[in-house]
Length: 209
Ligand code: ATP
Image (tube, rainbow, N blue to C red; front, side):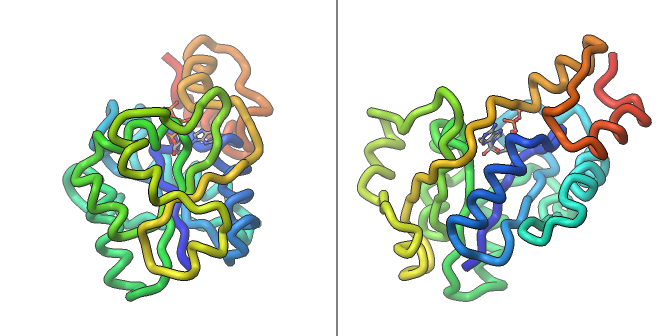
């Protein structure tokens, strides 16, 4: 089973890393592939360039065998549409189960993604519970994805795509927005992200205004 975890990672922090590792352990898979996007299609342009965010990700996962990086979106021109990424992964992996891990906040906005309904024909969704977020009670997401929900990780292995699993992960109320704000204000972001990542940010004077 393959699992990717997409994001802007601007910058990567413990709120990405620990839940990604929780997913890797809960699904019993070798690795979760962190997949940075080049130009996000449905949110503002990242503050750091793609290569800078990639360099921070590399520092963040150094020595961790349960996580690795899939940089395919950084090599593709134009907006990073997840449906295109999943299509290319599907071509590589045939009928193997493919999972996309995303936070509950990202799930709530899934219906704004490019060709979003095709995504469920290409992969399963693994929804990570994020502090102060809940499964949508009504609306398109609740209506379309509710019937696809499963409770056991094992259910994801039985078919290639089309199931939605909610996973409890370590609750870390950390966001990249908060970290960028701290750094722009000249305040400390220590203990929110790996030391090596923070050190590189400081060396390069990234996110400072
Ligand atoms: P920003 O604050 O810039 O919006 P972010 O911290 O939400 O960034 P992203 O790179 O946009 O990080 O998120 C990538 C993925 O990681 C999304 O699916 C998001 O829901 C998830 N994620 C981010 N932070 C957490 C967290 N603290 N706990 C669980 N999931 C998280």
